[in-house]
View 1: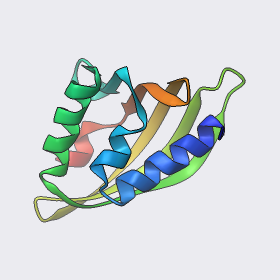
View 2: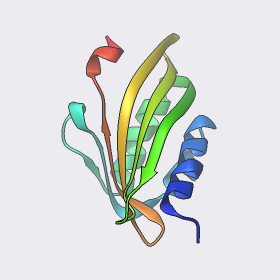
View 3: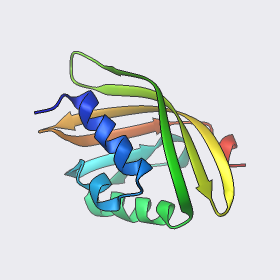
View 4: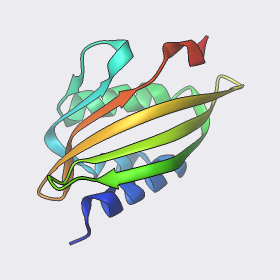
Amino acid sequence: MPGNAQIIDGFIQAWNNLDMEAIMDHFTEDAEYANVPMGPPNVGKAAIRAFIEGFLGTTTEIQFVVHHQVEGATGVVMNERTDKLVMDGRTVELPVMGVFEFRDGKICAWRDYFDMGGFA
């Protein structure tokens, strides 16, 4: 079984490929996904899918560029990255700090921290 950091490498690749099914395959059924500055988390795979589908509906290109990634002794993975997005015809480069928790080789919690000013 791959380490959690390797799981996140595959997850990032799924995003870069805009592969919705591969993205969703990384989550537990009861996972929580929070874009922290945007409000409460999306809870459960159906809610996460709905949020991501809405996001991908306006996005034609994604490149998550990971600058640093660490896996702690508890298995939590954190990465510092720049999310480069083409949304509604404009390019956004967003510095992000992501935190990922795991259960049985899947993401059970994902929190992204970023400044909403990047979308302004």
